[in-house]
Length: 225
Image (cartoon, rainbow, N blue to C red):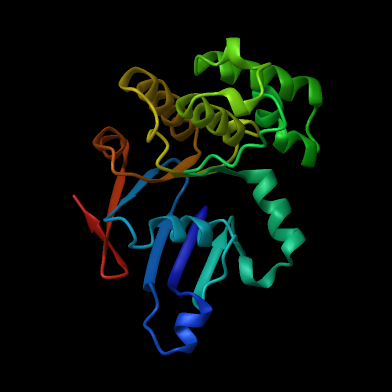
């Protein structure tokens, strides 16, 4: 399994201390290689929190998260960061771009922290940008890009290191239908190549691509047809 979430609970520390129930409770999810898993549910139910737990950006208050066979709570912060950088691609809903850098520099950010060949990664960044209709925008500061362009930059960045697993928060949220189809095709190729995608989404087109579909029900995940 690339990802195993077992009996996880999470809530803000202040709320838990006050006796409030956790936002997520007894939540379990397993993601094998070569699968697309989609998670849906109303706003505020914990979908983005789930992705943050899977990536080791948040620590569960109960239960465990295993990423690529390693229990995240047993690793140091540096070890978790290295694990993310080597094998995980993240697409945040608010993109998390560095507006002091160009689009190309943002796509290449994982290369600054990895050990890959710079020339090869630059070539891959340009090829990804070409696939997602960003080639003419690569030298522009990310601050001047539209929301849809920023989202595509974030997706290219997530794909740069050919990750085994992509965690994507509303990956088509700011895109028109044609561009969304391009993004879904690229992500589908990731799955066909043996990688996996976990996407949080309200987009029916994304849900249709998924092999496994889950919905939040009162802080828990329920598989749906």
